[in-house]
Image (cartoon, rainbow, N blue to C red):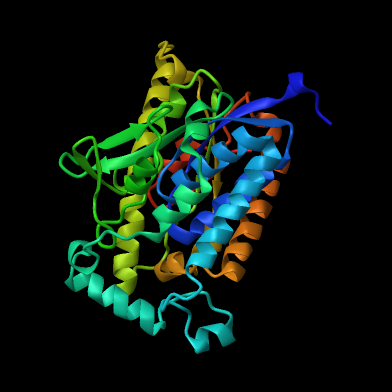
Amino acid sequence: MATKSKTKRINLALQGGGSHGAITWGVLDRLLEDDRLQIAEISGTSAGAMNAVVLADGYERGGREGARGALRDFWKAVSASTRFSPIQRSPWDRVAGNYSLDLSPGYLFMDSLSRLFSPYELNPLGIDPLRTILEGQVNFDNVNICKDISVHVTATQVRTGRARIFSRGAVTVDSVMASACLPQISRAVMIEGEEYWDGGYSGNPALMPLVMSKESTDILIIQINPVVRQETPRSARDIINRVNEISFNTSLIKELRAIHLMQQMVDAKGLDLGAIGRTNLHLIHTDPEVQHLSASSKSNAEWEYLAHLFDLGRSWADGWLDTHFDAIGERSTLDLDTLFADPGVEVPERV
């Protein structure tokens, strides 16, 4: 067992993606299991924000095992809340072992309704089961007082389109619900007189709070939305899916490009750009494994499916630790030179 003096501190950036956030849960479970690592700060958006606050609350109450247990309890509660939902897989998909909801009558009906009516018309009372789950599962006082792990949650201000980052002292159930507020499905969340939508439009996840962190020079991005698709979509549903993927990845790519340009200036001219010049970037990405998952599967919260995604996340984290643990604190393993050399290349890693 590693001694405490050799523990490496790392910051995490967690993307959103509906039930695909269970992949991130698996990654977090594996990282928490490794006592060579200490999570210092987490920036999360949408499902990533939910994972972040659940982890911090559990950690404050019971350390690593408390965080792991809290994450499992949260995803169990999410699954249980949809048990009697009309949005279920079709019999054909169940027989085929397909977790898509593309053939689900309930999903297709609600999807069609959301294109004709706003959530203000369909849900005038603003009822949201996820809010109920968060209020029952998470003590936000613990999240805000947790000394070992700081949480940052990103939401998009509707009026200006700008990202707002809620950090220690301001992380509430409202800020997390705002971070996960898809405007076609949920009413905008009001916070201090301003209304907010999903943070994925402006920061998925926001990297700058982690770049400026004094706790660690290393940022591990857990990306669950595909960056590259080799084939151009043809069906209406696939086109909408791809547009959403591009939209929710754009803010992350822009922040990575900004960091890349700053680091190039450091290398070329020896400028002192502070934290940006010292930042080591790492990535656990799921492109090859989620290519076949449809957008509708993000609404599938069956426990069997969530457990499958959890296992995938653990295995990816396990492989990343085996390959890149020694690089933490020393160098980046995400190769930004290659990433921005050709817009058609796969997301790379540098050994």
